[in-house]
Length: 116
Image (tube, rainbow, N blue to C red; front, side, top):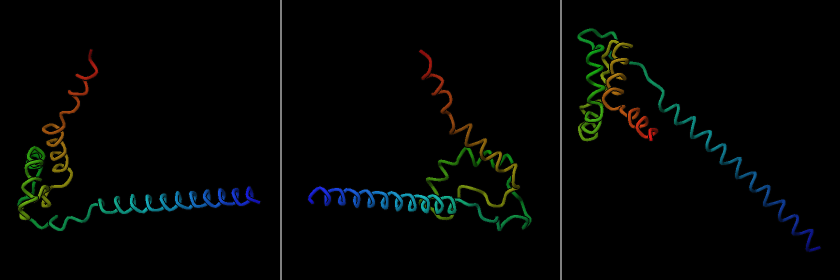
């Protein structure tokens, strides 16, 4: 009789473990979906409003100064990291190129580490 109760106890603990794994999986999926949804881009309300728009060269400059702009934006809410009134693809290309060339730098370090 004692063994039967012991087996039943093992079965119920296995069920609880399966239920906990499922809950963890569901919570993980919900967290990933919320994270991805929070990163979704929104519309550019300043697009097509006329005036001077930021192009490739200003995007390149903004990419170079991205880290400094980020630090300043933490203390001053009037400073933003990204110019919303831009020309689109060319500004984005310049911005990413600026970030990669000025702040990327990891490729050379990786290549040095593999040499002996």
